[in-house]
Image 1 (cartoon, rainbow, N blue to C red):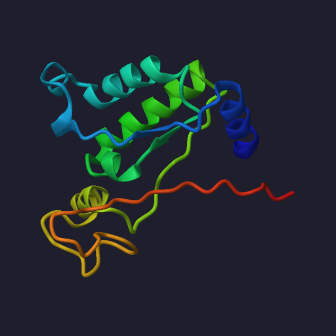
Image 2: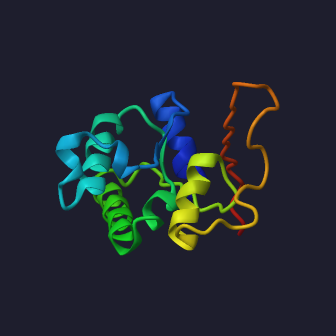
Length: 146
């Protein structure tokens, strides 16, 4: 089902664009930061502004889990909003645990607080070139199994 929806969106919109919903409350506009549903309201605005351009949305679990129950509620509200208003656009849930620096930092906060796990990343973190950092992310769409 996901693969079919994704291919349909790519063909219909002639776009591979996937909008990552990696919502960091510290980076939200000031007027939203004090809103009780700040994360959801920000996501909703992004979704409404981009739905006609994208082939999928990808919320990143770390950014929601780091906020505890409030963040998980915002994630649910976001997914419910997408399903109710744009059901044709697939949601790709990014819940991998070995990830790039900003995501790994949010996982550390969610699961370890101020402590630091022995290994926060699996895979590419940085190129060994001074002053350069490369973050690589990819999505693979696999055929459904019968």
